[in-house]
Length: 368
Image (cartoon, rainbow, N blue to C red; front, side, top):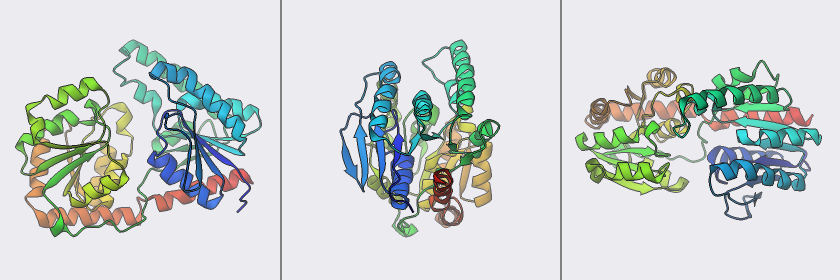
């Protein structure tokens, strides 16, 4: 491999240690090609981690200031880096990507989510405005896609949106990395159902907290509330006293919590932007060897049913969620088997080790 190649990843939204961006893509590309830089806007300063140079252009206060100022700051730092390939991760950086193309650079757009669909669910926009913004952005995104060196998508569904506009579109799914054996003997696990991730209404937090009053086990929640208003609402529920709350935790703590749990929860609402998504936490639960209780979304159902690794429920039905959790806790033999099935499927097909080869091949082709 040519170790003189300079690669630069860009994000104005994600934290520097975003699992997909840093732990999966940047570390992989640094090992394969060397000289990888990550530009972020999280306000935590510059540092070098595992030979990846991280540059911080400063955090803006508020969404509007971020959208206005952060892309410009990211672009200026990107020019200073003078990389051979730029790989950006946020829709608001599309103008930055197009400017870099005009400078003669190779540019990759990493599409984590279907933003036009996601915009339709934003509570801070009225319904009419959501539809207008979603329509305009989708047109702009597709027009811009024609000019990019490659597009990387997190799901096959998102890939199909871009296939007609760019011949170099590749689905690189956000499956777990298989690095160490994190399996725990079932007999050493505790009667714990865990949820890990962002805490918002659309992610089913209200319902799982309400269900906690009916459970024959402890409910553990680890994550950060989307805003103070929702945090106040949830923590004031009488059922909150049944929750063991860990707040935001790092990767090591997540692994520790899953190693003692018997169930992983991913009961997100069936909104437009989740229907075709592949939630990372579902696959992390499976790799940890625990049964999954997921929303009865068709795509997720197909995985749960095919792999026989959990139960699907209506995410808005508190009683149904509680019943599913209690049924798994009551049958250790079946629960252990579900956990083994899920883990086996991760090791054999739903893992980053397989997906990473696709990303390396994309870069290899671009460098040719």
